[in-house]
Image (tube, rainbow, N blue to C red; front, side, top):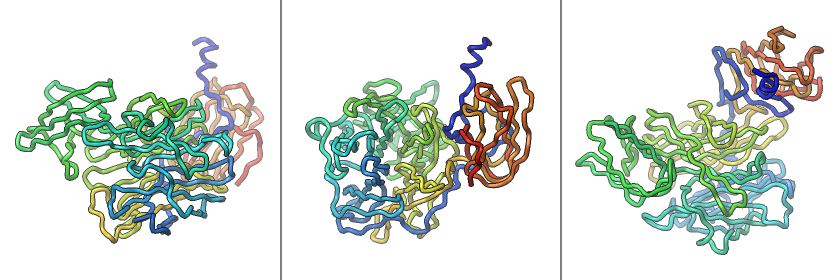
Length: 497
């Protein structure tokens, strides 16, 4: 390898905190265990119904963001049960100075009532007078017609107007419901993540794998044991297709009252796809962002909110079980915001015990709040599952969980060895607790330092006289007990709690 090629292959570690996701950070891992479920929940709802127009209560929300222009946090939430119908919604807004105590506006938002819940974001770097707040909702015109995204904008976060003249014109075809928006600070673009239906079939030499934008026909012929599909697919190519697929002789399960197929060789389940826009009006469909592993017949992804944390893409997929109808919030990661990988099959935030306000579904949407040295995450919660009939005893509310700084994913055992990397500031910092052995080698394999550390630090500076800028090193972390959350290159040798 030429010297220039070697330099290009060396990762530069600056003051951006690198989380412990298995990615391009590590050259080798030995007996590594990770834990991504260290969030602590409040035992009661953080936000509940206070107004009659909130119907059955705020069971989820469409956005939670820091508004730098006004110096506060804003939350947009969804209320279901208008006129006693679970399919009718109103939308509210609340604001907070500290991210913990919220004040609601006493009237609902001016958003289309015939649209389903969507997502709201604040575009950074814009003044209060501009249309700086954007919303994307899902609308379903009728049976056999393609779903569409309603695009609107707002100056104050309360009153929204359509992006292109009227709400009938303000749409692009393709996205299904459970839409999540984000502003990508890395490439200055809008991204949307949304649920789509995937049909997979692999039998007798016939292999099919499609993501549908909508179905014009969906029939289950139980007598002849076959399904008939017709509709528009967006992936792997955009076209109209018609399928007649037999499941005779297959080991199958069926999901819900519509009896969607679930098996190993033939299944229909929900995945997350994405699209991208530079102006919020014109969108380019990208394709699947996160799909369940084959053979996980009941596991599906019902949508996924994505944030950028320390220049990394962190997703919170809604992990839906097609057999039980329950839903929990997981965690996924990506280096480009396009292809995501599930960090763990266990939920990031699990449902509560039977009878609790969050025993049916946990739906994590919104940004992460940093309050001092803790992270806060809000989630929609219900006491009923997705498929259970609604009763007057059901509860709909918003809960809150918290974690330590950088606490998305921790190495809790084993050894990770980094690639060759430059420490941009010449100093190594870690966020860790417990007992960890730290070894630093130069590119020739000579050990500069090898020591065991014990304690609990959000920011521990490891300064060694032989560590310099512009010189590559390999770092080996062995977690004997406790957890390693992140590492970076700081500009100081001062350690902080």
